[in-house]
Length: 129
Image (cartoon, rainbow, N blue to C red):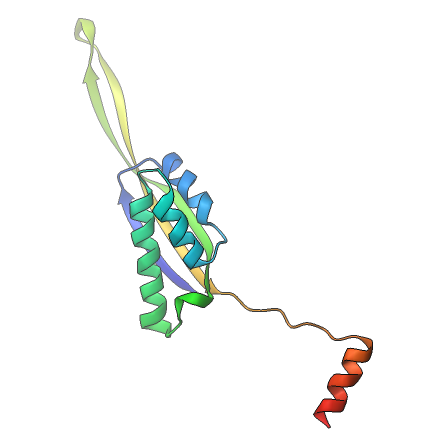
């Protein structure tokens, strides 16, 4: 498992999840292509986070990016900074500046082994002899 994380990103989790849902389960090459063309502010941070995870895979495990996919991407709530906006008659409205914790897990895609039946099985057995 290859991981990378981003803490206290200054965009609310609700907005980041919109972009994270687009790349969940995708191949990393396709995910990078999606992140370059989406029109949301969170795209640049997620693109950098994906690049970091790919670099971790190559540096720590010697895995090329062609075989990787986004196994899990999780967006959790981070710190909430509380501010106040003054309004009329000496009153104030609360403002909550929300942050996000984003973590991404990459894994290698394993091709399933095809089971041979009937004549194909007999032909494969004959080739082994």
